Amino acid sequence: MNTANRNTLWASIVAEELYRSGVRTVCISPGSRSTPLVIAFAELRDRCDDFQILVHIDERSSSFFALGVAKVQQAPVALLCTSGTAAANYYPAIIEAYYSRIPLVVLTADRPPEMRDCGSGQTIDQINIYGKHVRYFFEVGTPEIIGFRLRYLRSLISRSVSIALGKGETPAGAVHLNFPFADPMPPIPIPNDIPEDLALSSPEAMLGNPSGNAYSQIWAGTRSLDTDIIATIANQIISHPKGAIVVGVYDSPPEFVGAVRRLARATGYPLLIEATGAHRRDEIGHYDSFLRSSNFSKTHAPKIMIRFGAMPTSKSYLLWLERHIGCQQIIVGSINSDPTHGLTQALNVHPVNFCEQLANYLENYAQPVWQDKQWRLDFELAESIAEHTIEEAIDEIDELFDGKVYAELAEILPEDSYIFVASSTPIRDLDTFFHSDHAITVLANRGANGIDGTLSSALGAAWGCDRPMVLICGDLAFYHDLNGLLAAKKYQISLTVILLNNDGGGIFNLLPISKFEHTFEEFFGTAHGLNFAPLVTAYDCEHILIQDWEHFENAVIDSLFSKGTQVLEIKSDRLRNKELHFAIWNKVIENCDRNFQL
Image (cartoon, rainbow, N blue to C red; front, side, top):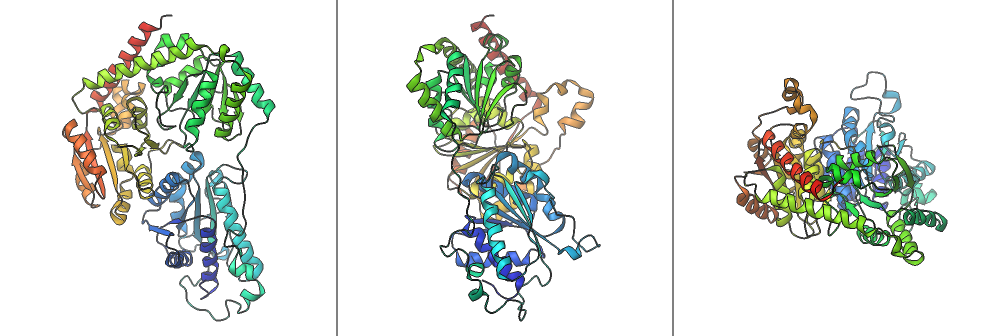
């Protein structure tokens, strides 16, 4: 404990209690008002080899970097900044953490109350600055060195970490603790600031939990459903053999895939999996393509849909649901996530527990004769048609086409690699064109579906794991977070960035607004004409402009086994990309319509 003054002791207890509560990484941005906490974290790192500090000049990049670390490690990460607008730069990442259920512990320094709202420099109203997008907020108060207040501080920190992890009454997400500090900020000794007998009069305050664990602990089990509820759902399934199971965007636990596959067998339903939901093996992965077929989507009306994770990215899936709005949706693990506003049953239950409970019931108490095998076979046929149509189309394309990038990566990437995919077109193309026999984990910031912070999140995820990481992003997402590359330089992070540069917002070319040529390019296409090569090399990263597919394959393989960050840029034409996308989709529609007559 640093007992130079009340600020240093207060901050030392915060750092120690965070560590005891499971925080092993803190991302810090420079500033004066946060000095006591910075010193405390630096001293903690000197004592604990497994405690890591990363310094980011840009608070927005820092917060998304922390998000990437927390996402890949599934562990809480702390953020620390000074007072003023520094805290506001965390907001986009906090919103993403809220919707993605990622545990962040946000520590903002502040001036003491008497120095607020009076013209004091670098001071804004930081009370509840993040609104409802944090799971918990608390104004910590100025340091006061008495036993009761120090015990309160320990209890507050440890409980806050538990809340961030989702062990309380809310899902995982960010918590915000606001720390006002009066001078002095550095560890300047102040006589009589710390009572000499504090360790004797209040040992819990100074030493914490004697066991070395967190001071206040929250234990949380996994929720299960009563047998009568499981029986009710099972009877619904038996009464409606034409159903489906879908896995949308979902950071699933390792045991989930086996459990949901077992449930699919027990129900007889086709299992539709988005690339960001789980590894697809023999499941239905091309549903976005074949649901574009009017014949298929009209003739295949689901009566029950069991969904895990967020609503799938696929627009054709959403339209299919809206066309058959009478379908009963059973949404597992999420209370309100149905933008169709259809008939829903939301189950506040652990997804793996639910799969196992329902599969057990169906296997033991129901005969599979009720299953509609033709229904499932139709989905398997549509999957096969879409898969082969897309493969044939991709094989015939020699030019640099965004969609083919994913098909090539499916052949190149080794087992247990990671893909971090940006929002907008990349995540949709990944779902359509990436189908690998290898177990590849896909990460994405799909809570709020924004492009901000993509590069920093991927760098954080790459720093936080020991497996190959590939980021796929468009030029606008890359430009939007260029500051994030400083972390790649500073911490020698190994990341392969595939930069798909079609000079603007390619997603808009695929939308109806592209037909309005008078306003399209200025407001939606937004061509920038940037040369990324010097920008990349300014951060000591390697830039490679891809010439053809052989060059791409060699560059990816070399990058995966190289140190540092390499940016592999693929230039393409937005209009040509649009033509190729629609040519492939139209061929899938034609082949499906021919096989599924009205």
